[in-house]
Length: 218
Image (cartoon, rainbow, N blue to C red; front, side, top):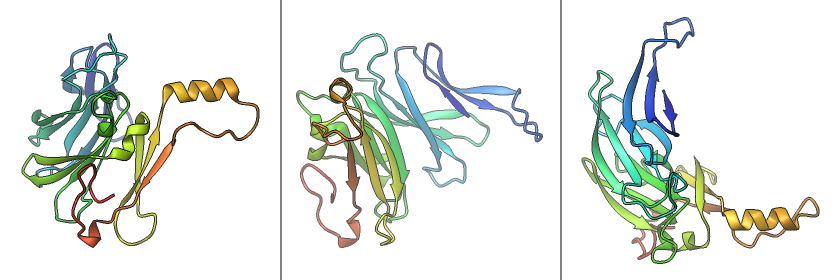
């Protein structure tokens, strides 16, 4: 499967003939308007029926115009088992860039963590990183992180970095103005950045601490 993110934005399934040839038959599983700003997708079984569903992320804010777009966000496309996908959940996230899916709180269902490269920096910069706690079938409780206010967040990776049995998350940034400044001032192998380029989120949900107003057990 592949995501095409420019012009004819779509997710395409390339059929394997069993010999490593993916020339056909191919099927368009989902198609989106050319201004959607497709960024990322991953596949996980959200409803527990044994069929991988699609989590689709769109938020490239350089598609057509750089304004806040209400159709940016994350979407869950449910798989009927015959490669037909139907949207079952949408949550708007301005400038959404990537998402990671895992059972972060170990309650038996899949939660979501998202980044935004073009959040609402004037009113809600904390929404540059958001956590969605799964509280029921296609129902998610959103949390934001105040620490996200200082950058434009993009890529993520999960790993149990401290070996406590709980998944942690590394979040990488792409602050365009800071990158340009570094390039202009670079004179050697190291240079102090004006903003934090990487965040490490340690998963402390095992402590059963209450969620804070601006984050979920950071």
